[in-house]
Image (cartoon, rainbow, N blue to C red):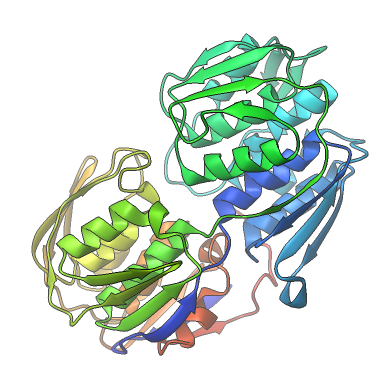
Length: 429
């Protein structure tokens, strides 16, 4: 089992590059199902979930090539033949984005069989909103033995009102709607940059979409889509994690190749904590002398403070003077990092969806367990300011969404090393 060994106490100095967004790349890879032509995606991150998605598409009959290094993190996907439109459980059990192939598969082939999604154990991401929308578009959906099966002659445009904002639901139904007969109007849509990125790719393939990035999206279905070349957005959560890393270590760090416009809520909160941030084009310079102030956060859908930054912010709050209150509004089980931070000396009390953090707490080294993707990031951050050498177990979680994070952090002064070979083992979840 792979581990990180981190010795704390070093400020991060220099520049660190942001990779492409995993949460953009996954739906864009799924969107390649919608055409027989080749799709080329650039700025693809080298993370476990991308490899899982590649295996998923190949199992359906697609041809997928992943290139890194000189190929500049590029993938080419050809779904000319889809011989087996099934998202098998043994492939998707570690990845929640498996439901994203449901919409494009039924739109393209009229048949989809998809295993119920897996991934991090941070709470329910109900697929019922996907089902409700597809049924409104004329799909017949059944569920048995852990699989959803959807059938239709051809999807038809519909009016869809999401009961609650859902990113994957918005993306899944958007992909279904582009090949449906007539017009589809979706209300209460997610406004995340990942949705906008997917819509931009679909438009470049010939789709007719209006309103992406707003709460109302209109789609005029077309008969056929063609291939495209599309560059994936920078990962705003990775960028936010590095901003916190610079702040918590009292460093002087430039986070490059990001999109500052996607980070406004994180930037504003860090500034409230006393962190100096200078935005220059596609980079943000973060400086901190360690004199952090407490501040409260409440996670919300975009453009609010992202739930995917909550755990990292909590690590920062342990080093801030005063009391910070964190309210988690998106997922009901996203405080699993709290007990591990407490093992390192953090003073955190949880009451339902609210965590109260009293700082400044001196953190010390400990053996800790990574429970999910973002919890893993929070433990890395805490370890970088803890006294002594901290051992993080089950770091395959962090590999799902951060590209070689230990190498990036080491390049700017962190003392972090990996025990075990990246991607060498396939952990059971």
